[in-house]
Length: 180
Image (tube, rainbow, N blue to C red):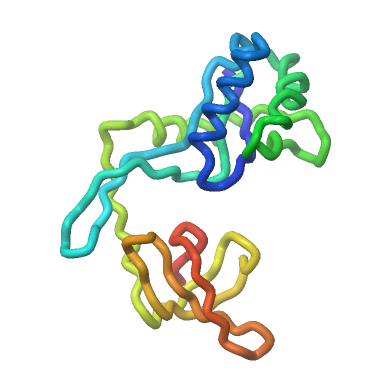
């Protein structure tokens, strides 16, 4: 079955999927979408005091995946979903183009990772103060800097980046930063 990627507001993936379901049911179009996948996995996090906690985490922030069996329904659904809060657009090859299904080799790892609920992933974001990192997402993508502070309870860190020859502190979530 073909899967389509849908860009949604980051940290609103669950809420957006519920709103999509409600809108499709309200319009009588729920038969056109077989499944809505929020790419989540079960993780084990270190907390203060050495305690560990289980929680669900979105591993592809800002994306939902819709299984739409009939390709002819996609343009109509794209029009309908554009009006749903927190939904931005279908991922397509060009702006305004009809969305194309994701290749099976891209979708298979996403499906297996999201559907393996019994597998518990341990999150080891061992960022250390002074460590060199690269920002990979957001308005400062491509910048490199040093970790100034780590906030494991918030899953965030402060990175000092040189902008206009001045060191500027930027607070970022872990998923926007990559170790070098």
